[in-house]
Image (cartoon, rainbow over all chains, first blue to last red; front, side, top):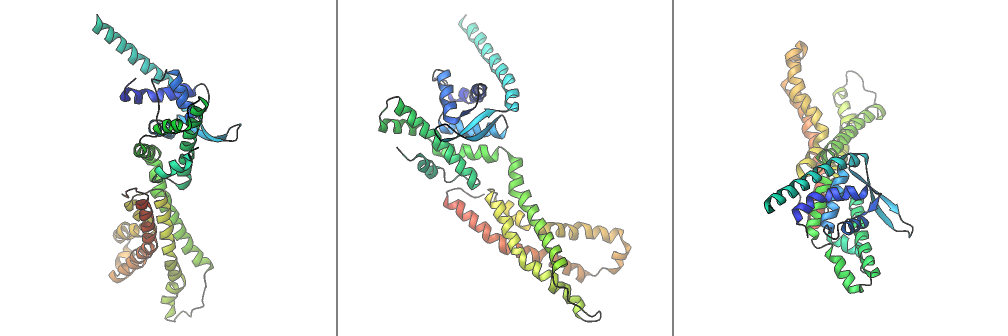
Length: 110
Length: 232
């Protein structure tokens, strides 16, 4: 299981990446991230919603109420153009960090 | 099935947000819990176990409330300041000025003989007093708008008093400048008239605005205390 500090940093990247494939509501979003990370990133309400609202304030994502086929109202989040622009540098930064950590650990093992 | 909406409302009633926004947050979180619960039932988990596991998603309500509050309000100080101070303040000012104009244009226009002593009293009776009597309502409106947006006591107080700030600015800055640059004013000014103007256009309106605004502020701070939200 990944520690909470790292999770916080990667959570925004995870949300933006998952929303790249299409709009999702909160539960679906959390479930998708959990599935795609094999359970390494798991969100409680206290971790997910403040982050979603913050990202919404920053206009990276936009939430709208939609009614599903079974008549249920859910708030769906979609990536905004600002969010799309934010995603690529974030992906680059994290990839760079992981490469650096990989190099570091390899050196440490050698 | 547990009543998720009720559960969320009980735990997050203290969110200091607009009532509509608060309702939206309650509905969204309740929907999340409902989906999680139903998904677990779909996987064949028993009802009590599904309810127990779903509740684990909301293990720390206090942290959730703090996080939402911070994200919705504090993360956007500009929007917050506009809705808590500038908007209520300017609306109160606009209403106060408009009322004064409306009373002037559409209020009673008594015929006063030019040498009558009424020439001094009529403007006061016909324009000033009706305006003055309506000021508590404007003060209450300023406090209501500011308080509803979750403003601190200081900001609510400033919003209440906003309509007298232009007059105060005039007496404190504009008038002294006029004294220096305008010879006519310098030679004709009387200290008594200056003081009367200050009392009539700043102090008395401020008292009237506070008479309406402070009870409204008291109402909001009591409501927040009842919800367990410390007022600043």
